[in-house]
Structures are given as structure tokens and as C-alpha cells.
Amino acid sequence: MLTIKKGLFIAAALAITVVPAAASSIDRGNPSNFSVWAFLTFCGLIIVAQILPLLRKANESTKMIAAKTREKKKLEAH
Image (cartoon, rainbow, N blue to C red; front, side, top):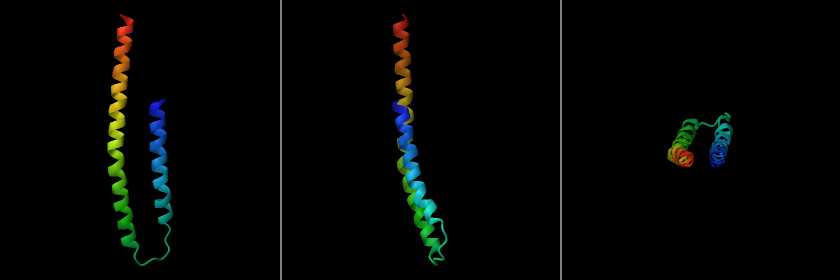
């Protein structure tokens, strides 16, 4: 159940960040197009840099919980 909540949270976070990026892709004839895309790229890199450690931590905790569950089942079987 916990992993489902984490998955939904990550999906929601990605959906929230995709909407502004898709809206900014509309060409409005702005002469500073390069600077806008450079700024959006920089913002995207910051978001990715914040999400990657979260994903790693979630993966580690999932493995730890699975190992504890396996160990608990082994102890109950004996």
C-alpha cells in the first residue's frame, strides 16, 4: 500500500511539472525564445535533481521492507 502511495505521489509530481512545460511549448513569436528554453531546461534539471534521490530512497526502503518480510516469514515457518 505504501509503494502505491509513493507511486501516485511521484506520478502527480511529474504531471504537475509537465503541464507548465507543455503550455510553454506554444510558440508565441517571442524573440527571447532561447532564453526561455534555457530557463525551462535549468528548472527541469533542478526538478530532476530533487526527484532522483527520492526515487533512490524509495527503492532502498522497498528492498529493506521486502527483506524484513522475507526474514519474518522464514522465522514463522520454523
